[in-house]
Length: 301
Image (cartoon, rainbow, N blue to C red; front, side, top):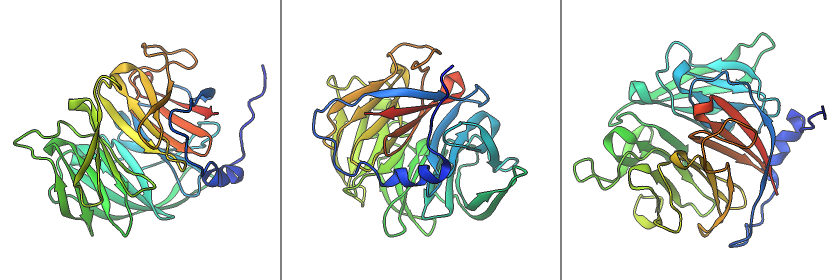
């Protein structure tokens, strides 16, 4: 068997600086599978590299914890939040060491200080804060600029902006169902806030104050419950299109430029089953192959 070659952890840290030129509109992007984890997770959802890329954090929903992985070998080396989290759906980072967790089952965002993993598998992780005011089963969270945090407040059918743990802006209306089960939110290089609206099979693009700029959906995209998203340094947007059993790649103008998966349920190489998470750094993409209970690593070109 050919030996898998993957960058060492220090080299992985440098991947975050690669591919800074925008993806040209309409240019095809392809991805090659280079590793798949063991099926040791319980419906893993969104995932995020720890700054500066030494570890991969995975929201392991059914195991009620954030699993910490070696990003190349995809081997679990530690966990955070066991015993205090309930069905965490998302994990992201603010700055160098603040880990934000969408603790969905407990209707809150939990903030940890996370800095390292020790040889015995324990972690240097300390809980700093709990934000719960106005939150109802939040399933997505991202750190924006100037300390602002954005949350997909799924149980309330809204997207909210937080400052110091308090809601300062809201988009959507639970009564009017303007959005239906928004799941994830991300901020791109243009400071646009992008949220998934799976109940309406679309993405919503906002300004930083959550004023709607545009919608991305319809027949040209054919989304079927788009769940979690991530944006690359070059502007590429990665969308976990759950019920289409695929990952959709969009350029900075939201033109489709590629796909991971066959579009059909599968558990073989390059196949996925209802994926719900994605992370990207440089040429590398990590996919939460949710209902196959595993993580996949791809290289794009």
